[in-house]
Image (cartoon, rainbow, N blue to C red; front, top):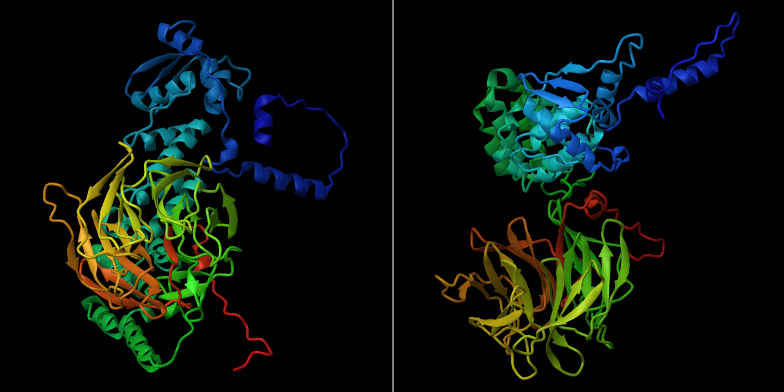
Amino acid sequence: MNISMKLRTSPIKRKQTTKFSINKSSLNKRKRQIGKSRCKVCCCSVKWNAEFDFPKIWEELRNENQLCDGIVRCQDGVVFNIHRIILSAVSPYFRALFTNSINRDKKDIKESNLGISSQTFRIILDYAYTGRCAINKSNVFDILKYADQYGIISIVQKCCRFLLDDLSPTNCLQILKFATQYFCNKLIEQGNRYVLQHFGEVLLKNECFCDLSGPLLVQILSDDYLNVKSEEVVFQAVQKWINFNISERKVHLLELLKCIRMGNLSYGRISKIAHWPLLQTDSACTLYITDILTIINDVKEVEIDPLNTYLSRPRIPYDIVFSIGGWSSGSPTSFIETYDNRADRWLISDKSDVVARAYHGMCTYMNNIYLVGGFDGNEYFNTVRCFNPSNHTWSDCACMYYSRCYVSVVLCAGKIYAMGGYNGRIRMSSVERYDPLRNQWELIPSMQKQRSDACAAVLNNKIYIVGGFNGQEVMNSGEMYDPLVNQWTYIPPMISARSGVSLIAYSNSLYAIGGFNGYTRLPTMEKFTPDLSTNPGWIEISEMLTPRSNFGTVILDGCIYVIGGFNGSTTVNYVEYYDVDLDEWMEAASMNLNRSALSACVISGLPNSKDYSILHYKPKEPQENDEG
């Protein structure tokens, strides 16, 4: 119990003394304790949260206006009859007010005039009598303000929880500003993180962006965790903020300009920035840009260490691609690589699983990665392994009913589905579903066709699966499973038969990419939009740069990435991505290991995303006996 609480709950008994001595060390220790007790603790801290049972009789007495012994008059003139003891039970403010604990020689106060609206006070009163608090977007700020003033910590916590759940690009800056006024440290931390992670949307949608102070904007733009697809977005932020009030804000221009990591932009992009008229009228900024262009031009043929050069230091990615397992050099592997899309580099992880596997399925749930089934060259697995990237640990999950390699795996409505595959004897049509919360598998209706080496995706809470091999032929057919009716139905067939295909959902359409048609590996891609009113079936769109089958596919930065695979003669480590808006394929950095039959996924917003970025990566030191 802190000192302030002791002063309120027990009278001080003074004892007369004629002589006393002071121990300086004890006195200094006491001063430090008093100082600590006066520091305000985070209002939304968990340790403040105490559950309390609210007797129903309280609400009945209030509704019947019985045994009321106090009055509260709000600023709009509305009067509430209250029970002082009930308000005192939830609020230290009202306890001190009504018990007159400060001026003990005076009578207790029974009436109070408050500078609060009756609408807001009624909500606080509801909580005092029932424990219920009707918080919504229109009243949360007022409720938090007065709950903090009256010391009703439980309401403050409810408000903070509501605001945390309500964070969006349009309101995060307002919430962050408000949280700083009330020592809501958790809300401040989450608000800061949200602004960094969704900065592009905040820049476009938040009306309060231009109200940021210069120092706060510098802090945001210089942060390693700022999630921007390109440093051009940082320049756009600087330009928008300065243009809002040029006469007062141009003094910040050079400092803000230095937040842009121009080493990650091309020479042409930097030259375009240099043509901003406001920059050309500022001699210091013009000199800075000239120096940057000179440096980049001089070292463009030299490899720069991004860790030691701020100009080319990459941001920490918000989205991390994990590439796990697969077939390489004639055997399966448990190898993990992660892709840092801000540095365009694949990094080798030292947290590989103990189980090597290929032709497995993989999906993510609650920031955990689940590896399902697969093949190690001898055994067909029914096992499931879970990797937690937040703490770098592996664990076993419940086994499937059947062993499955070449299995198709998706997550739909919080459940993991394993469809078809090969058990070492037959190609399968059976389907089972896993509940991660219960750690339990269950069988559901089988597909209409046997399929191994097919691929599945989820769109609008329905599961689609296409292609595959049935033991006799490569197929072009597809099916859809609706969990609400627990039934499989056919969808229009693809243009090409494909096994080892990748199917991925993006922007209300399905994309079937690559695969093997029974004769050759395919570079082609087909698109299907399941809109019954205008459905033309599958249509062919741009081809990949490299034909491939049995590769990983993810959505990253609004593009479709294809990773590794088999090109018909060898496993490859090539990575390329498809820009849907441009209808164009482009190359990305290659993996460190050639492999096919791998699986890939994306996890966003990891608290330790730096662990999987180039800023954390430390290349192995060469050993004395290493050659070369």
